[in-house]
Amino acid sequence: MPDDIPEGARRETELERADRNFVELLQELRVVQTGVQILFAFLLTLAFQARFPTLDPFQRGTYVTALVLAVIAAALFTAPAAVHRALFRRGAKREVVSVSSRLAGIGLTVLSLALTSAVLLVVDVVYGTPAGIAAGALTLLVCTGLWWLLPALMGRRGTEAGTEGTRARGHGRGAPPADGGGSGG
Image (cartoon, rainbow, N blue to C red; front, side, top):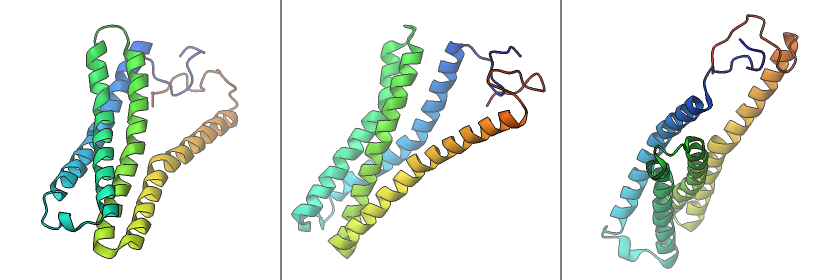
């Protein structure tokens, strides 16, 4: 393994890496998109329920907010496919991956707000506004914890473990691994 390839790194060209990253991103978006579609369908049906006209102005505002946020999230999660299609075979794969990753991150933020709004609405209708606000806040806290805090902590821990593991084996930066190889992760 050449000295300039870190231990555990994949042996792939920039284009191969961009292709792999885009495929992985699309797999992630497929998972999230299904949830957004279900949320959006649920919200669409609410307006046609017999009890909908009895909602107070706060509840109606929360409903419209949740609906609009779900639409924006769906648009953000499908945008990478549109960007890819528009730039297909133009040699812009790295840019497509970069922009698509940002769109997905923004989409997760918007989705967390859509879920928060939907939970706020349902719990408000069932148990009242104070309970709805508490449930909405808890929903936002859970999304923030699982979608941003957990990955940030794992990334920091992984970086620290990688640095400590390299030091423990006596390798400095760019030093070849002891086994002379390694598989990509």
